[in-house]
Image (cartoon, rainbow, N blue to C red):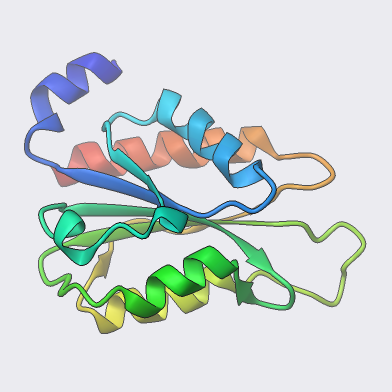
Length: 159
């Protein structure tokens, strides 16, 4: 299905996946998502600081980042998003945030809210519900895979 979808739609929906990862969990999630996603995005670790010029031609932005502390962006994503000032008019985005809240009942996710606010301010349009995924002590893969399947269906409708 992925190959057929890409042959039909891949050329019209230029996508990029931007991620940050401190301990490797988000990187592993990105690898699993890429195996199931019906578009084949170019992938950047934001630690490598992709420039606005490198990102200007993309239509769809997929952001994957952990939430740190109490509703904070991971440091590499925070540094990246502060310098990200590309006009996203006519472009769409999707966000997946990961968290480790086992034993931290008073903390909550928050990276998604920070990213969403910034991307909307840059005129981007969120085209699919974000995912807040607890990643410790066990990554909820079934929840992740269901989200990717629904995202694929949304992308098929969109294209």
